[in-house]
Length: 92
Image (cartoon, rainbow, N blue to C red; front, side):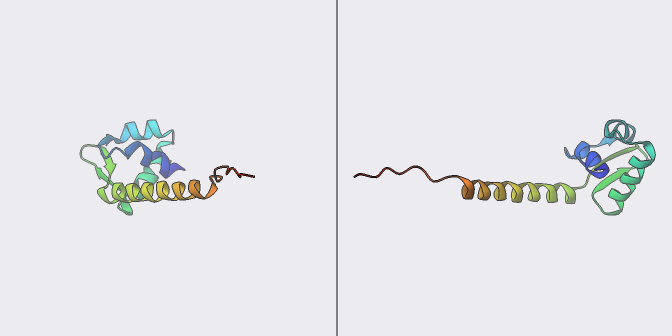
């Protein structure tokens, strides 16, 4: 959940001040910085230490967009399968 909190804050693809990310995430500074380091290590975010800011990487944004599309397609498929058939009328 900690990683999600940070990724949600960065999903706009813009640069964000790391101090603001920590405050808005609701995580302790230690946990937030551990998460940020993990996300950098796996290429999910970029960090500019000189400017003390971070943003989601293009690779992560592309991945998130593809996952959202798959989830949307899946939910539409499930919706089609669970929609009851229209009532038919029989002529006697």
